[in-house]
Length: 142
Image (cartoon, rainbow, N blue to C red; front, side, top):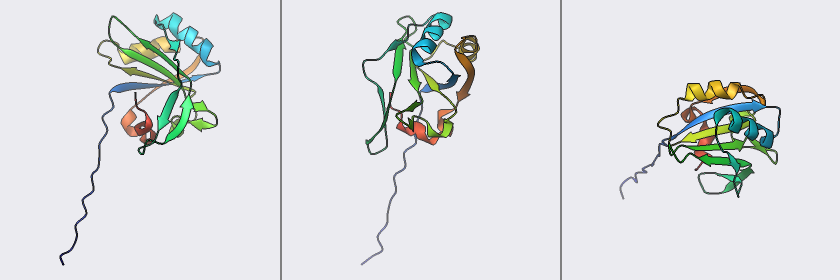
């Protein structure tokens, strides 16, 4: 009998969103109010929380979610609280309180968006992240 060969299938993820980390000492409602005011958005609390799942489809954690879909540009904004029920959405970035994800963005300059976010009184710091450099972003499905 011949030697059996094993083939391993590896998948590479393509991330179709911008990822911005926000540090804030305020609760999500107050932060959202400030972001909506300064960025002229209409983020609203989603009916359901954001659920992070692993590769096997197992539920990892639930997080507060706010969303807005711009009818003019078709861009989608999602603000998700990082820590909920003692678990982190992105465990590698425990110092970040919220993540703003921007999908289907073909118009908004991320650097301008970051500059506007820094002017929100509830915001202490803003960071941009490359999703490909953070392993737990595989658990994010929009």
